[in-house]
Image (tube, rainbow, N blue to C red; front, side, top):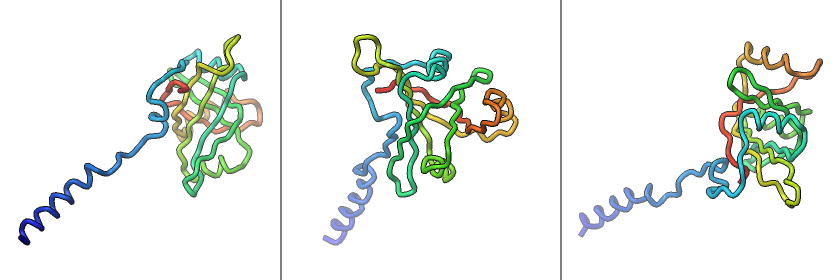
Length: 160
């Protein structure tokens, strides 16, 4: 009887990882069905730099809650890679960035004529640029006296 109980206990312990919920990547799994369009490449860069549309940047607060900031950003291209140019005054978003938070952005084009909401844009996965040589090249595009942060756009997904 003791052997049967021990065997049952061991089998239950082996089954625990199977029953555990898998880790969820909220950025790529927010919308598993894409009902809206995606723009990317030069088209996305030009749309972002037109300063029309809806812009947002998300970080994670120290307590794990989301932080969503609305501000307009720019996009530059170096070689074949696109970079988001973020200019922020010190606030909770910059504090989160300084603390190593993941940073994601969203750009949605203005609604097409006759539409009531955006149907095309991009959710952008970002990686902070730390290479000094690359930063020097990117800063050439910044207005005089402006010291933005640069993030490489590592993935582009539809807005939803």
